[in-house]
Length: 524
Image (cartoon, rainbow, N blue to C red; front, side):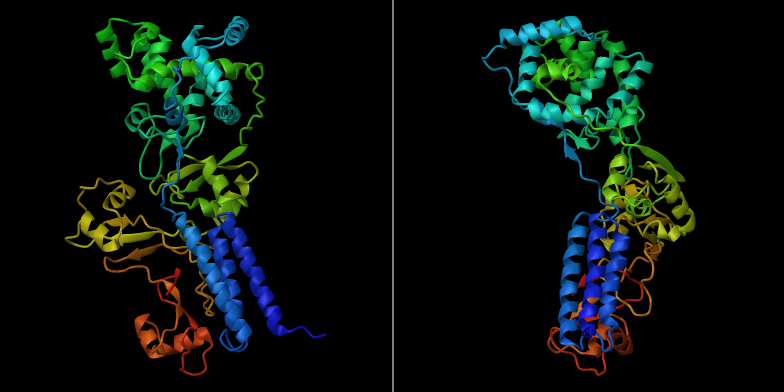
């Protein structure tokens, strides 16, 4: 039985569409773009064009709708300059829970913990008092799931943290502070804007050596922030000569702690916090909460926890050029974009910084060589899709931001400037808005889409926007002449791209339009 050539064509187009959808789930935007383009090109390049056979026409329209929906969903997650999503910090939730109820800890809990403390070595004093015991019971009850997930996640970081603290001569019990601060989540962000595993505030992070700019925030780097935490704890201990006070000041700040000590005349944490007069409740609860977590974390099975540890990811480091899109690296490594981002949580955007020379990027073990090879083989314009603006005489950051429809602060920070900085004629500014990755195909038969490479970097003048390629739905009264003028193309180009024989347009028909500058696509 002969094969219906139309059905065969539709099946081939569908296979490419499904490939594109799969690549999209992995964050491989360039590969998805090629697959989607190919699926539409097959229909456009059918013997009489996508509008000739009713089955091809209907299938083409369905594919356009489906690709448009997928593109919309993809772009909803942001472009390459959208900041990565943070997770809520556990400290906010924990400190919001009232624990000083009328129920005293049970005698059984006290006996159990006392026996444990006699057998288990601790390098920070842990008093056997009701405040600590209440949290031991709370972690075994209402907060059991929270502590279990934190213990599981923390297993991948504890060896590194303990190694750093051991080298710095710090108590190893401090390694469990992130269990309360962040549940060991590198991207945790508190309501007070503290960030990372160690929940550094911005200023404190900078004081302890953590770099923060528009592209990078080392507070989210577990290793670098651990070094900073060690430095900060040593400073706090030198100030207070007491680990309980040092821990409390890690939460409330050394200035507040010093004022509380002066006002109260007390330099012991437990007597200082026996009243609500000198410190807020969250700081009063902070130390007993951590000590209770340390007790359980050192012997989880004794407290009913069966922890299946998350293993540390096996990684390699690759030096990549400036401004490399993590999604390109994911394609080269054959991994998902999310996996690459999770290995490099300090990166605030989907791209490495633009002015670093090279950047040491972590990739899954076994993929470094192929990533290096792809970097060498790829041209610099394929690393990312960047837009630049060359400053004209008399222009200001504010005027440029308004004209290009970007946030002035983002424009300044993306170029390592302050919002009030002056710019000079001829200065080249990065526009903090990535071009769409053209998931909706340009579908040009002229071969505009041939590889999975990202689009070349573009330099825009002050009045120019990236001209997108579009799929246009014909409205009543529209003509090829009017559409050619509207999209700054020619009637011949429109007819060639859409395999049109005459000049008559049917209302509702879809026309693929290729613009000279753009590779993005949108619905009209």
